[in-house]
Picture 1 (tube, rainbow, N blue to C red):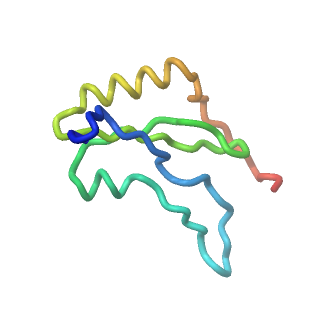
Picture 2: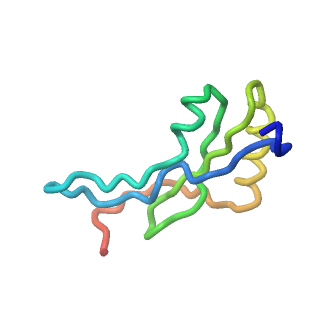
Picture 3: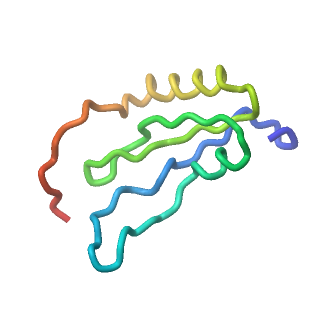
Length: 95
């Protein structure tokens, strides 16, 4: 981050939700949460989009002690995009 003069890295928190496959198990598509956990750098996740009506998170990761900056970035993203919606019950999805 220092070399490229970055204040934060932004990435999808996880892939889109998938239906449970009782035979083969879940279809894990990876995510960005491991990077900050392993590096011990702070991160914050906010709603970033919806895919087929289900939320997909967006993670902001920063350098050590950059929590105030990450909170500002996450708040600004939420205010600009208005992606966050109240949760609702969806009894089933039509794939």
